Image 1: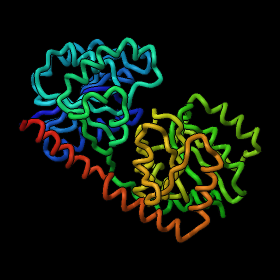
Image 2 (image 1 turned 90 degrees about the vertical axis):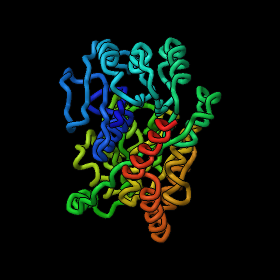
Image 3 (image 1 turned 135 degrees about the vertical axis):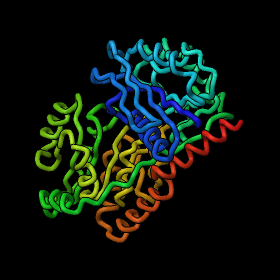
Image 4 (image 1 turned 45 degrees about the vertical axis):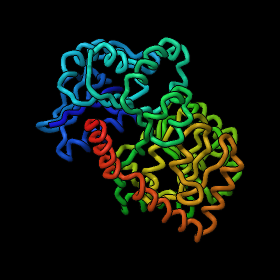
Length: 372
C-alpha cells in the first residue's frame, strides 16, 4: 500500500495551513489510503492520535516558539527514524522546522512541496532560511499552490514554473442551521448583516472595514468574529467613529456556531490588505451557504481568484472603504442581484471548492507523480 506523510506546522489546529494538512490526512484515510501527519505539538501533548488502523497524527515536543515557528528538534529525530516508510512526503510551506527536518532526514523518495504562502513578515527569518528554502524548491518533485495566481506571481518560484501546479483548497459544505440562524437574525431585527471572521491582526484590514460602516446607513450592522492583538485598538476606533452598537466584535466563535453566522449574514466581506492572505478559506465557507462575497484585490494574492468577480460577488481595491461601501450597497439593495450572486457563490463552491473534488485531484496528483 502506498504510504503518504503530511509534514509541517503544529497540532492542535490554529490556522489555515494546519487545517489543510488535517483535511488531506483525514480525506485520504477515508478513501482507504495510508496517510500520516507529523507536526510539532502546540499544547504539550505528544502521544500519537490514531485516526484508523492505517493513519495517525504524530506530535513532537516543542521547545519554544520563535518567529511564528515551532522549534522541535524531536521532529528531526523522528523523521529520520520513520521517513523510509513513506513513498511520498508532502511538506507544507512556510515551516522552517519541517524543512530542516526533511533536509536532515536522508529521505530519498518523492517530495511534494505545498506552497501556501511566501514568507512575508519575518524578514530576518527569511534571510536565515533562504538557503534552506532554495534547497527545498530544488528538492521538490512537484510544487503545489492553492491558486494559479499566487504560484505564478511568487518571486521565489519564477525559475521553476515547469514543476508548479495548483490545487484549490476544498471543504465540506457548512450545514444550514435554521434555528441558530433565525436566533442571530432576531438579535438584529431589520438589519442587513455584514460578516467577517478572522484573527484581529493588521493584514486583515479591519480598520478599513470598520470605516466602511461610517459610509453606510443605520440599517447595516457589521459582525466580526475572532480575536487577536488588535482588539483594543479596534474597539477604540469603533468609539471614535461613533459606531458602538453598529459594529460588534464577537470574539471567538465556537466551531459549531460558525455556520450559523455565515448563514445569517447578507454578505461576507473580506477586507485583507496584504498577500499574507493568500487564499482565505472563509470565502469558500461563505460560498458553501450561498452567501454573496465581497473581497479585496490584493496584489499577487489568490483571494480575488477565489472570489470570482461578477459571479460569486465583487472584488474591490484594498484600503478603499468607499469602494467597499459601494459594493455592499450594490449587492444588498438589489434583491435580484443579491439572488444572482447567491446562486453564483453556491455554484462556484460546488464546481471548484468541495473537499471531495480536492481529494480526488490530490489522489490523481500523487498517482501521476509516483508512476513517473
